[in-house]
Image: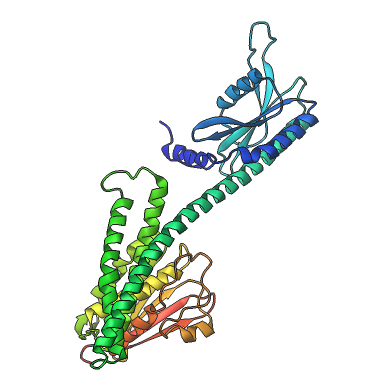
Length: 433
């Protein structure tokens, strides 16, 4: 029975070399020419394997029939565990030809030991150990050239995809700009009509409410349809590039919706319109639910979330929705900045009539100057981890969490040092204290 995981790994590795083409030929022709010269004019053929089969990539000047026979020999290359040269026998083309011609084959191996090609050398001499070393060295150099060609081809393909993606984003941006202009016009009209009855703060709330109707509703539809198409629920899309576009639309839409939600929550809190009703409740179920909610994000980021609940579950005075939002904000931030394969630890204890929760990551930490600013609205750390390529948010997550904790009678603080992770800690009053 074939080893399916190994076969799949080999197929995936070979697929990466499909894009290697004529751009590498001048360098490879020169390399094969130099090799042939050192071997007294031997015939050299470089055959590349990809997921569609073997194909000649470069060769010295040789008879077409000889090239075809060598290529057929390459297709039947036996498995090779390591580098070096192996000797193959090229069968005679006809009964008039002498016995089998010895051919040296130097496989091109990846670091995982997968054969991506072979350098075949046919000559009319006895191969010495020095000849074998030269051929093996040439094969290693050819693999390096091919890897560089693969990198260049992939880079050019990525540039093309980015250009197409940029064009699509430009188109979407023009639509959003048109909607924004319309929203500005509506806001200005409302401001004039209600200036005598409301202040500037109420106008801001009205503008954000209009944004909810004009942006949030169609954006939710965009996200939903993009998710359906991305998962191909109604059938295959048929083009991997389109799947990439759908992934970008889906991710950008969710990011934009998150920004809108943060802005609306901030506006409600500032206007005193965020309804918070603290009451006695069990703390453990809320922490357990929010940890489960971020489980998918933790798996995606390859981060482990640990929590040892206090027993029995503490009774706290809190608002269920507001407490969940605080926990989700802090857990999402911690998972985002935790190291790959790292751990986010949720600690909790009871002290002095308060229930204290601490969410700690093992990420890059925050500098003292950034730490002083991060509790203010729209402030973000100047530096981010090198692996963090996600779009920046509004800088409101921590501010909203702090204000929500304060509305429930508690306080929130950050503790961090560069290179030592970050701990977000908040407390809530215990029931009956």
